[in-house]
Image (cartoon, rainbow, N blue to C red):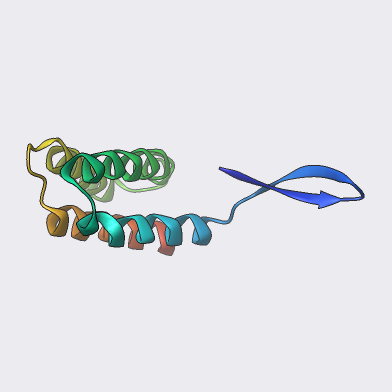
Length: 106
């Protein structure tokens, strides 16, 4: 995800800060309970894609125990989103815990 910033009539890519991305993901999580089941699953997939990419980077810096915990949380999130009737509170709590780890830098 990149934003463009105009300087001297041209556009240069400006990476979005992690804090901004985390805020966007949190807004997505907050809106889950207002959506249809199909909408919830769609948004959960987007949240998972974000978490997958960022947790993957964090895993390389983490010790074995933390690495296992991170991977387990991702598996549980994926299972929840794959359920026929996903639990928004369960998904949200697990996602928030991973977001907190990302925000703290691991």
